[in-house]
Image 1 (tube, rainbow, N blue to C red):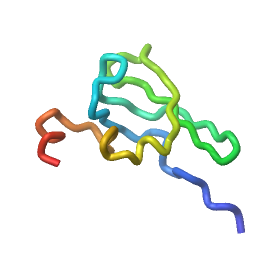
Image 2: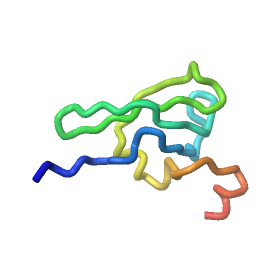
Image 3: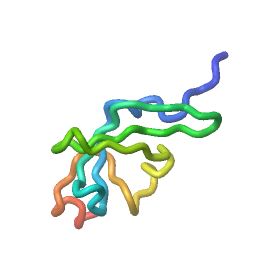
Image 4: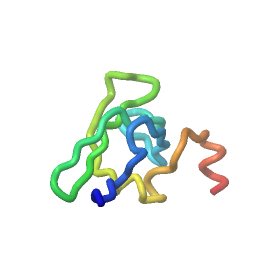
Length: 79
């Protein structure tokens, strides 16, 4: 049986940063990179495709930093 892939639906997923990151809050994962036991996601700002960075995919599970989907500031304050 093949080993279960960590973060199988990572590419194409959308995320909202709870803090402004590189001037933006809404990002999409456009690429993934596996390095040993680590998984990295390449994030691109939805409003500025020139803003790109790599992040450890585990950080996306930190609810104090990231929320799945694109959320408005009002939606963020409700949760």
